[in-house]
Length: 219
Image (tube, rainbow, N blue to C red; front, side, top):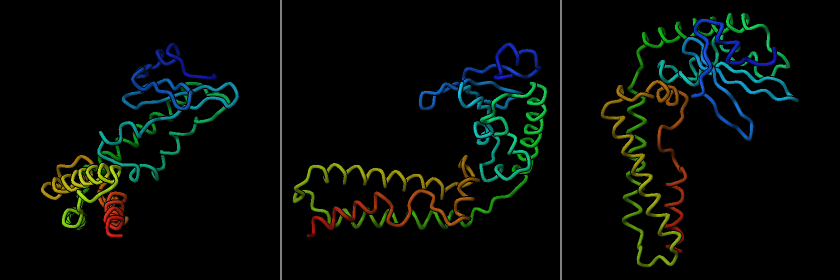
């Protein structure tokens, strides 16, 4: 079997063709399917074969888990088992693997729901980043003399970067006020645990360029 088709999957209970998952990537057309709520995408290339993937990434956020949660599970390798094969096996074998993945998803979803996330470090990091952003804005506003700026480009950028930095600060304020309400809190907590930033990092793009505009004016 070279590809899944609408006619083939129609014979399997719970298996459907789903155009909502269709997309194009670099000129290659992928068509979507769904099995018991799990999306699949497929592309057939005459030279390289069939690329069929089980798209756990499409539903992870709805299930409350992240890539960090599922990429090391014993079933995740099945999601790319048929990604780049010359021929697909009989559809019954694909369904068997789909059932394994679906069972794994259900188990992981239950595990995640029963876990308690320590929000202390998240809030601490959010407060640090908020202060960093606010200090950058205050410093820029106190030193930047817009009427002396000879570059319209720098003026536009200053306004844009200040607004974008303020938007990041606003996001951090919401997180600090009620971290448990953030739909991405699990992912955020995992980022913080790895030492990554949430919204604002030291010497990030906006901070860097706002300081460079000040340096240029002072020169």
